[in-house]
Amino acid sequence: MGKTSSRFKAIRPRLWVIYFFWAPLWVGCDHQNQPSQAPTPLNLTLPPKFPELPPSPENPLTIQGVTLGRALFYDKSLSRDETISCASCHIPDFGFSDPNALSRGVGGLTGERQSMPLINLGWIDMLFWDGRAASLEEQALFPITSHFEMGNTFPEIISRLNASLEYPRLFRAAFSSPDITQTRILQALAQFQRTLVSGNSKYDQWLQGKTTLTSEEEHGYTLFFTEKGDCFHCHGTLLMTDNRFHNNGLDDVPADSGRYRITKDPADIGLFRSPTLRNIALTAPYMHDGRFNTLQEVINHYDHGLVRSPTLDPLFFNGRPKGLSEVEKKALIAFLNTLSDPEFTQNPTFRPN
Image 1 (cartoon, rainbow, N blue to C red):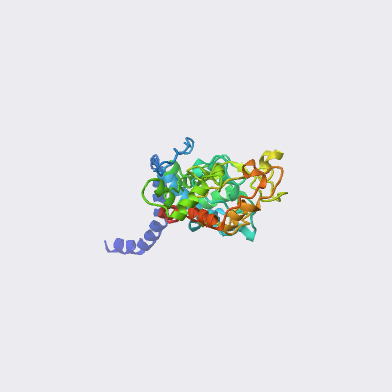
Image 2 (cartoon, rainbow, N blue to C red):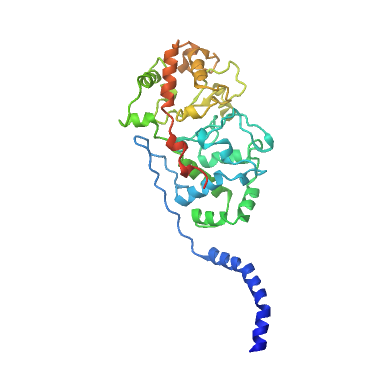
C-alpha cells in the first residue's frame, strides 16, 4: 500500500492537469449532443392604436433570437477591423441614429448618407433612404459588407463567432442548432430591430387621454395636420411617416439621385423615403445628407426654402412659400417635441447586456 500510495501521489498532479484540460471539451461535447429545445416565441406588445405588425413567417420573433440579435448589434467584431458595431451609427440616446451628418466606418471612411433612425422598422417594407432593401433581413446585409461602413465578409464573421465561447450557445438557443450562418446572423439582427418599437410619447399619451397638451403644442398639432403647416401629407399616420418617396425640394439638380439609383426611372431623381418623425428632436441632423442641424432650419426650408425641379413633389405646391409666422414655427417645434419617447430611448432591453 505504501508504494502504491506514493506512486499515486506522484502522478496525481498530472491527472489534475489532464482533467482540467479535457473536462471543458467533454462538457462541450455533451452540450453539443444534447437535444435542442425550440426557441420561445416572443409576443411583442404593441402600443395602443398601432397597426398589427406585419408577420415574418420565415423569421418569427423569439426571445432567444432577439437576445442573439442584440448581442450582434453591439458587437464590433462584425466589422473588418473590429472598431465599429451597428450601434456605432445607431445610438440609442439619439433615437438609434447618428448625431454626425455622415457616419464614420472602418478606416475612418465616411458614408454617403445620414444614418436613418431605427424606429418602428417592422412596418417598413422598403428600407434605406432609397428603398433598396425589401426586408430587415436584407437591410442588415448592406452595412456589414459595405467597404465604407463595416467592410467585412460573412466567412470572416462566421469564423470569429465560431471561435467565441458564447455565440455557438446563443445560436443553438435561437435556431435549435449551433451552426452559425449568414442567414441566421441576418435573421437575428432583424428580429432585434423589429422589437425597436416607439409609441409612448407625450403625443401618444394625449391621444389616449392620459395627459394634455399645452396651448402652444396644441396649436402646433393643428398646424401639422392642416394645409397651413402641411406636414400631414407625408407624416400624418400614427407611425409619423407614409413610407413613400418624395422630392422635397432640396436641390434643383440633386447631387444624390436618391430612389433613381434603384429604379432607374427619371421620375425618381431626387426622391427619398420619408423618415419617421417619432423622436425627431433626438435625431438631428436632418435630411438624407444631414444638411440641416435644427428643426428650425427644417421648418424654414418647408416654409420658404423649397427649390423647384422637374421631380418636385406636387404636395409642395411647386415651391410656393407658406408664410408661417415665427409664433407658428415655434408652435410646430413644440408639437414635434411631444413625439419624443424617453421610454424607448432608455429601454434597457434595447441596450447591450
